[in-house]
Length: 303
Image (cartoon, rainbow, N blue to C red; front, side, top):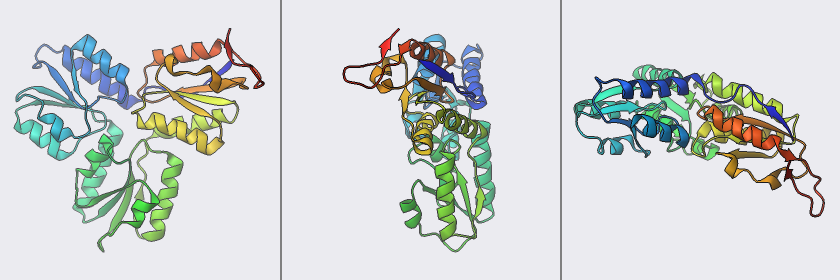
């Protein structure tokens, strides 16, 4: 089968920086051990497992960062993940005497700074994001009484905001098209709100590239972890923007040849926290598939 390799794909700079920081901290003999990561450094289980196996890093999996802190002994070393954390989490960690390292992506840090600055000026923030996602939780934690998370139009309808200045901002890894639609809807209700679209450039470029590629092929495969929001959004935008079938796979074990009956070409991309080796394996596997017509007992077979 013909395989189109979509670019850009794979690691963004925020993921690279976070992984490099974790390796550097764990390798530094002056740093107290063991090293704990409060959550998953990035949303990819292969990255997390490798850091544990090669560097002895302990990743505490969970969405409530304050609850995870209870598992960390006083004076230990903590790394905050690329998704960012609330000020309350940092305060508790420091109060426990922990040595803290912050791997928050620079784009996420910018959103935190924006929210702090606006709320200090008396603004309330309508934050377009995913409920329960660590990035959203961290940003909302900057000003819990003034930041209002919305994920759907129903959430917007349910808002009961005070008569104060309003601003709109976003999680960095959302679908840019869904986000634009929701912002337009919010502005219908709150036309005076200032808009600060914080979807990161890496997310936008990957979404635009995969949609463009999808128009030229029969199907799309996204290599990524199911907990990765940006990976799921790549699947979503292909289906919604092009109508083409799109599948999220973690490894070649997840691929089902029957997905490609009647397909002669497929585009492959990957989430921004997906190791390159996994994507290469998926590409190699798909290149061995022999296209078959969708007739009777026809199937897609390996060459």
